[in-house]
Image (cartoon, protein in one colour):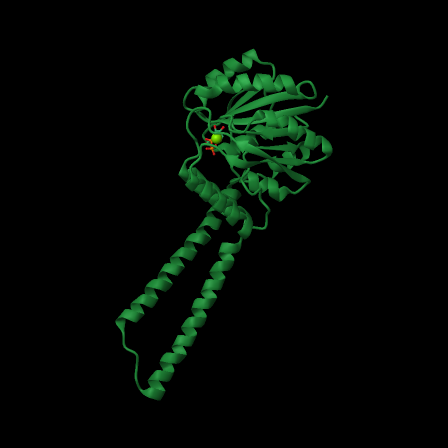
Length: 312
Ligand code: UDP
Ligand code: MG
């Protein structure tokens, strides 16, 4: 029989662990009729004692393994860490808060058996989320799709099944600031989608703060698009052309009409606008440069502080 690995990142999810494991017990039992299952819980350096609780749970269940990262690295890195140690012929990642129903995995496996390598679970509806955050997240994916060379699932990448060769590709091309969904889309292979309803969070609060979301957005963007830099050249070109035309106008007025244009105000406006644009462009360059530096340092993406059932 084949083996499937479920990789579940957890960050301060202790209060929900027992609900999660109850649900997993049932799903694993059902799946085991057709495939062997292992579950890897990746503790993203929780501070609520999750790791001790998980250790305890590992003792009671033969399918459960766990690693704890040495610092909070975000769920994308946690997923990649889990994938690195997954032994399955395929692997699924999903959230610990049961927003992504593990029952769907059976359908994903069916698609995998048909020969697909990446099966995205695409949320067709989200429960318990405000209209504004749905709006912003849709905008995020539209921007990514419009301005990068990759085709990203329209509604995000929280839940997917990957064939072993995709897992290997993912782990080896993660880099220092991985953007999980974008990377998987970029890898290629035979990809497909199945729809699902993203339920409201069963317990606790969302661990994806606004800061983390903005960082993830910049990572995906810089990681897969050169358009901002193209834009800079374009703006520079337009500004230079306008300046040149204006210089001719000024010269003509001075010599033909003998009427020099006066004005401290107009000069200030031009200086401020050009200065602002330059700062903005330096900032954009900085985003790329900074990630480049990070990449060239070649620091490990994550370190493991503790583990159970993982062979290194
Ligand atoms: N998560 C993580 N590290 C983080 C933030 C989140 O491992 O720094 C995990 C979290 O425990 C959950 C999953 O990533 O299992 C998705 O996060 P969450 O449900 O908080 O995000 P949302 O569903 O609100 O996008
Ligand atoms: Mg969630």
